[in-house]
Image (cartoon, rainbow, N blue to C red; front, side, top):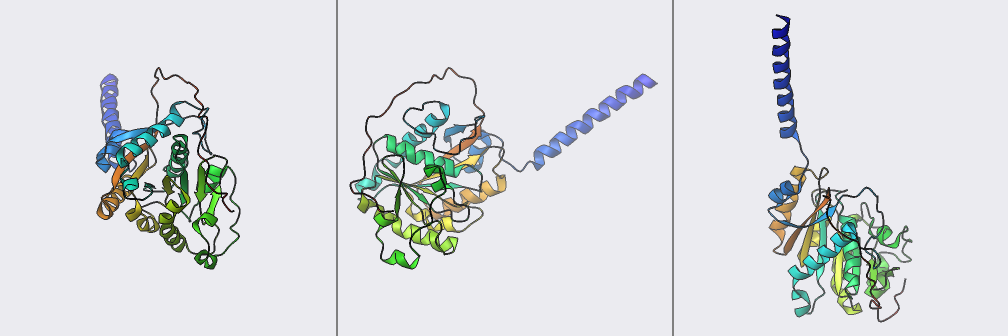
Length: 293
């Protein structure tokens, strides 16, 4: 009968729909949730950077700003400091925090720039270091402008002090070390940068935050892993590929015994009773000597 055919058609359509849904679920190649990221990396995500409707291209961690996004970076700063525990300073070194991700667009540069600014708020002289010379963005993010081309060459680096290579920023207590614009391969620039990072202790740096190239796509980051005291692994939900995430954590674990922290970016915020407040720090430390540009 017509009604029987209608019922049968509905059943068949429902089964087909379920089958399509299952196939899509099995073929889904991106990380979709915080729990899924934690399972893949084998790490508990202590910090989630919330998804916001606004697009933020600069540093959001500033003294007068306190809301879920900027305070998430402050929370990350506290977690990193707790995990590192002062071990580097006890050994006469500056703690080096490496920010890595599986691929581009995961949010590592935003994490690096805002984490550096968050450390400054606690009175630490901080150096933000760029080592992603394929798609450099750290300097532009912090300076809020495209960086000027260096007034020196790769050959000149042999005679220049580390102080000569640092660029002041509008954030008192934060400087940038970025060799972007020099005529050399990305790999060579990353290696040169890595070799100069230990010298940052000589200019009074308290903390070094390093933005890197994607682990699953480039080899440059591997030069930096041995320098890290803490490695922050950045994942963006609905963007990071599962296979790339697996390759990233396998590579990192094979190369280092450094502390690993997982940060999940883009998680939708639940409505909470979070309130905004204002607190301005009176002073942040100045660098002891004027930096040359």
